[in-house]
Image 1 (cartoon, rainbow, N blue to C red):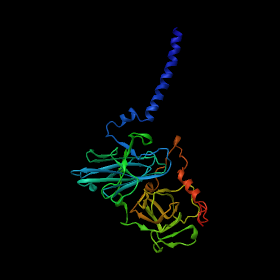
Image 2 (image 1 turned 90 degrees about the horizontal axis):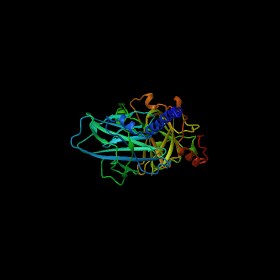
Image 3 (image 1 turned 90 degrees about the vertical axis):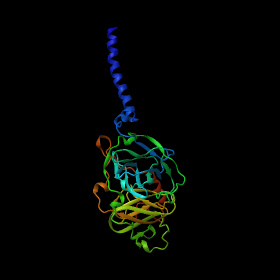
Image 4 (image 1 turned 180 degrees about the horizontal axis):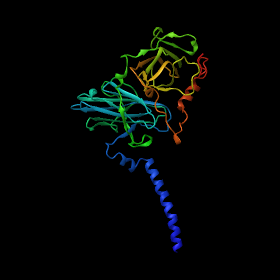
Length: 368
């Protein structure tokens, strides 16, 4: 009997350890009590997104809006924000900042006290994802840490642009945002604020976008045409077009396009395009009635090739006053055992390439 009891104890102890490890893994994966304990001292922060079928792998772009009232705006207030995959944030019609998500990236932080006003205020953020799914979290707090605005179910999702969206006019349509969960949550884990970033407008060297100087299309790829002299400024340039800005620039690309929503690919270079790489530099997803797409991150380029974006009419750039290599090249993601994972393509890239094969006798991947 004693031998049996000793054997049972030897078996029970490893089983208990295994059971504890399994339960702990489940708890960590779902960010249960352990995750909440890590952030017990901080105000609650939630992730939101648009509704819809998470199995839908098509790219998506939409606006998230939140209106709020302030009796007396604080002199100093900061926004901490993170958007996966991309966000462009505006407060009371002024662009605050934008970025593209990188694994384990800190929250972006902006000082926005001067942009707040007594009475009605409006936050609008354009969100994009190449696979429909994603997440967005934001908190606006004063200098003492009091939370003025946070992401929750009171935000509204707009899948179409309307004229007074940014200016604070009456909202048109919309649907409640979907609350995904409380931070730390999912692959974003525990969030830490990074260093303060300059406001978007303060980083620009010009007040207006600079238009590309020339363009060419596959049917006439041997000749560059002045973009400013082409007839009909609203005429589509076709599904494949290359733009030349005349010199190498560092800044944010803007593309004008009719209608929408539409999806295309953008390739950047300092030399004219010859063979296009298999992985695009940017996925361009426009919102219905907006007519404008702006890149979320700055890049260094002279030439831009736009593939598959029906209705594109022109290209422009918002050049920066100065930039750093770190801003142009987000930190590389590290996979298992520190190895860098291979480059991945969005599913839509292969679809667009197949649809465009043979367009105007043009082999996708080559410019004559």
